[in-house]
Length: 102
Picture 1 (cartoon, rainbow, N blue to C red):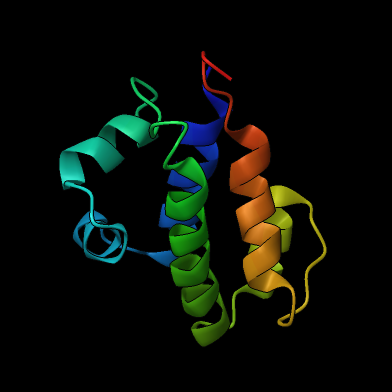
Picture 2 (cartoon, one colour):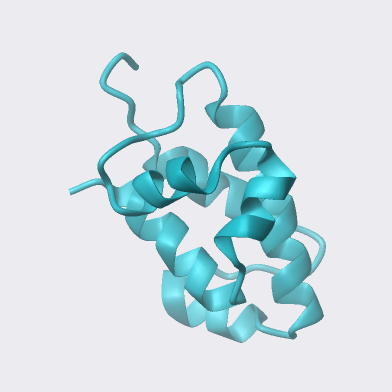
């Protein structure tokens, strides 16, 4: 099972983000994001850090704006504060990203 796809899907559901919004932010087609979520594909290893950083920024903004830090804790059992939220989300994505060529 692809943990990256699971985490990405959970973050999308938690924030209520639309794939089209994520697509606009990271510059990738919705079909790619869908494949990442459905575990049939991963972002290219070369681009993964940039993609993860952009998505972490978006998700952090949404979680902060919706006051959902508690929900993030419940979903991922990770303590975060507003100051480290983006970094924590980036780390979640980075740690679950395991590319076959890595």
